[in-house]
Amino acid sequence: MDYKQKKIVTKLNKVEKVEFARKAPTVVRDLEKLDEKLRKSEAKIDSVFMSYKKAQQDFISIIKDVETDRKRLEDDIREISQAAMDLGVDFNNVKGLKEAQDLSRKLDGLTSDLPKLYDTPK
Image (cartoon, rainbow, N blue to C red; front, side, top):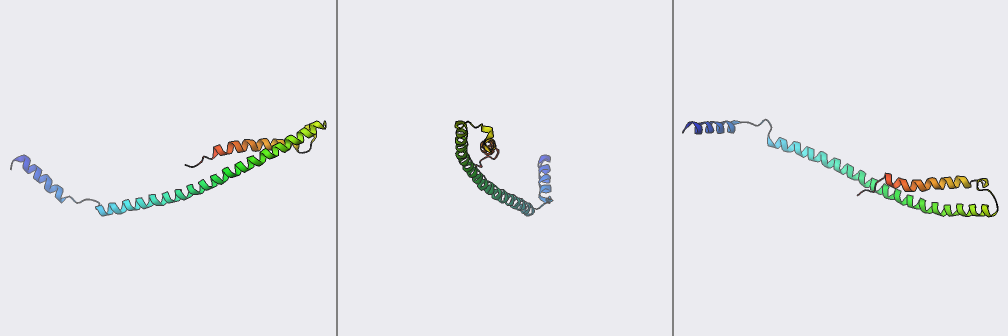
């Protein structure tokens, strides 16, 4: 055996004698714990996501209901305003009419803007 061959054999013998600081089964157990940790977290976020999805659908449904009812009441405001005008009564002198119109405008803005704040889950 020449010098290079002896050197390779010596290195191989050293590699055979090396003991690993950690045994593979220990590493497997640690990885299994990490897998379990991740799965628990995934289950939790999935549950929360499904709750959010249901709540968001309910929210959108309520917004649609509010908008439908608001439009109907807006028609009532127009009728009252027209009747007041026909009678020669100033709009501002009709008790509650200005407040109703302001609230209708507020609700119109909210029903337009709120769905944009809460994205539809995919």
